[in-house]
Amino acid sequence: MPHRISHQKKKHQHKQIAIFASGAGSNAKKIIEYFEGNDQTNVGLVVCNKPGAGVLQAAEDAHIPVLLIEKERFFCGNGYADELKNAGIDFIVLAGFLWKIPQPLINIYRNKIINIHPALLPKYGGKGMYGAKVHEAVIAAGEKESGITIHYVDEHYDNGDIIFQATCPVSADDTPDTLAQKIHKLEHENFARVVEECVRRD
Ligand code: GRF
Image 1 (cartoon, rainbow, N blue to C red):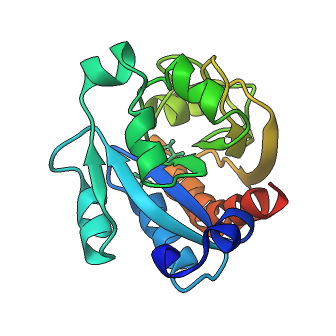
Image 2 (cartoon, rainbow, N blue to C red; image 1 turned 180 degrees about the vertical axis):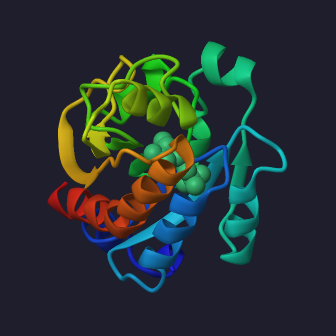
């Protein structure tokens, strides 16, 4: 547990992640499981803007504290930076979090906020491109391939440096639902591992 090791050790070895999620939380759950028992990195907080979201159950099951956030304070204050600091958060992982990250948080966590997008950026990204809308657009455009993009977050939607991409075929009979399943599989196979690599490199 972080409070049982010296400050020096925590600073250099043990990194704390906050997962921001507002939906079902299947990626959040995978990440939580992946880091359980990890001696260098752990998930210290789940941040959510939707009471009742599936991710809250995943946090509760894993005994991870939850911070429920409100829109006005998130955007007009400093993005809950004090709460994140007090929880000792070093990295932020966005796993199905739809609000734009406010500037104060971007400044404090520059190159320490990682997002996953369910398509091959720079295509099919930007404001309004989320969930089924992404897969509908990919299929409507007749793409033969889609995939996932894991990237750093900057002040623009889906714009920061790309860290990792993986692809899957789009077949003629794919629907937004079947494509979403393929994409989720890729996400679950790769996201936690890529996050770990980024945290280790830091
Ligand atoms: C994922 O498909 C991710 O790419 C997107 O939001 C979705 C979250 O799914 N950013 P889940 O809540 O982790 O199941």
